[in-house]
Length: 203
Ligand SMILES: C[S@@+](CC[C@H](N)C(=O)[O-])C[C@H]1O[C@@H](n2cnc3c(N)ncnc32)[C@H](O)[C@@H]1O
Image (cartoon, rainbow, N blue to C red):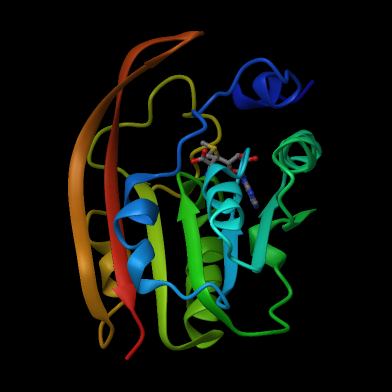
């Protein structure tokens, strides 16, 4: 039987949240730059804490997807409970159908779970399908430290340090961070993730 990543159990349980319910810091930090009419796309949304936050703050065109059916079922329940509207759907980021342009593309802790070719393609397409002035907020794990035991089987596309940044030449870099995070959660003793994170605006 194929292994299942630890977050699937929490997606099936309404009482717990694997990654917390607060939006990621950059989404709050840069919200003043976003317009409520913007077309938003969150890739690998999990429980969609960022998309729920934006929808709750009056953003009208919020789209969130994840490959996990359990995640999307939970997102729909959370949205209903919070009385917010967003378009959530099951989708593999590698085969995302780019039919329209976006103004804000968000992805936290997800891209390294597909082969490099897959996330490279996703970022290239996302860049092309972003309106001028639009913003990307992307966080990826790198190979600066080995993948921790809880994710090593799934982390097939760890970035090299600086690789993500390389995609954003010609964009205005609003924030760039590289650090090693100490992490601990049920089922996984203390472990480390090397993180590269970028907030960039299309010129
Ligand atoms: C570590 S979780 C992060 C979830 C969320 N972004 C957060 O920060 O709370 C990684 C997520 O990526 C999703 N994922 C993995 N591979 C994916 C793919 N090929 N396409 C879309 N989502 C994927 C998983 O289902 C999982 O929900």
